Length: 536
Image (cartoon, rainbow, N blue to C red):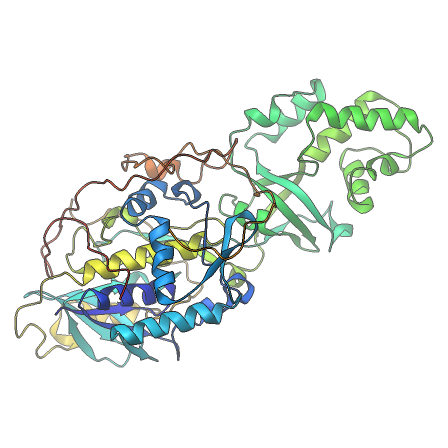
C-alpha cells in the first residue's frame, strides 16, 4: 500500500485524496489552514458552481493539455463521481451546474464525508515547505516545524500562487498573475456611469485606429465577422474605478495593462442598422438632441457618454448622416484604457504555476520525477467563469490521485532517519518556500520560466432559456478532437480562442496515447492510464 501525501486541502486536493484512497493508497492531506475546503465555501457566491454542461478544452488557456486529460476522464464521469458521493446537481442558465441545495457547504460536506469513508487522514494547521526525491526511492516532505516525513508519492495541490521552492528546481515554473477579476481602467469617459449595468460585447483590438478609420470611411457590415481576437458577451457593470461583470472577468484573462478594451454597447445590432436607426430618428425628430436620440438605445447617462466620446455636443441635434455614423461607431467601440486588475485579492484564480509540459496529462505525474504529481491551480491552467476552474480541479485531482495510488512502494528503510540536513538542498528550499499546503494563495510574483528537466449525471430541473454569454468559435482543441501538444501550443494560448460562432461539436473521444514514465526517482507503475474508481 503506497503512502501518498497530498499537499493542499482545496477542491483538487480533496478529490485527489478520495481517488487515491479508493485505489488502495494510504492518503494523507496536509492543509495549512485550520480546516480543508475553506475557499470552496465562497465559490459561486456561496453556491459552488461545480461545473458546466458546455465544458470544452478550448475554454482553457492550455487546450491541448486539458483535452488530453478530458479524453481520460470526460466531464460526465466527473459528475458521476459527485453523484456517487451523494450530491444532486441541477443546471442553470449558460450551463452552470450547482448543487441542488444551492449551498457550497453541501459539496464540501460530501467531499469530507467521502474522504472519511475512504480512510483519508486529514492534517490541518500543517504547512509543507518543500519536497525532495530520496536516493533509494520515494519522497521527503519538509514541514514548517522542520519535521521531515517520507512518502511513496507526493501530489502538489496547493492552489494558486504556489511557492516556486516547493518542488524541485528543474520543474519549469510560470510566474503567477491574477485573472477572472474586475478591471481598473481610465475613468475619463465613465465617471458619471458608476452603478449602471449594460449588456455588451467586450473585446480587444490590436489596432483600434484602423477600426475607427474603417468606420469613418464606410460602415463595414463584415467588421464583426472579421474580428479574430478574444471577446466575451454579457453584463458589464460600470464602477467609479473601471468595469466589472462576468464578461469583464473572462476578458481579464487576455488583457494586459496599457491595452484598450472595447465595449460594443449594442451587441445585437448590425453596424448599418445602428447608423440607420440613429439617422432615421434624427430626421423624424429634428428637435431632439444627440443625447436624447441615443437614449432610445442606451441608458441616458451611457447615451450621453457615447455622444461625448464621439466628439459631438450632446445637447445639440444630429444634423448630418456622418454624425450618425460616428455615434454608431462609438457605440460599437467604446474604448477604455486598462490600468490592470482592480483588486488582485478578489481575483477568482491565478494564471501561472508549474508548467504543464513537465507533467503527463493522463496521469499528472512529473515527466522527470516519477512519484511526483501536481493538479488543480498549482499547474498553469485556468479557464473562463462559469464552473470551468472547479471542473479542472476535480478532473486533475481525480486523475492525479488515482495515478499516485499505483506507484511502487519505496524500498524498506528508505524513510528512516530523515531530516532537513540529511537531504541535499532541502533545508535551503524549505527556508525559501513561503506557501504550501494551503488551498488559497498569496500574492507573490516571483518565478519566471525555465526549461523542464533534462531533456453522464442526473440533472434535477431544466436549463433556463438565457443566452450563453460570449458565443465562441472553437479553433483550438474541441469536444470531438484529441489534440497533440504542438511545439507552438504555448505561443497560441489565449489568442483567438473565443471569436466567431460556437459550435457544439461531437462526442468526446476516449482514446489517447499511452503514458510514459519519466525520471529515475520514486516509485514506478506499469504503462497505461490509471484505473479510476469513481464509486465506493
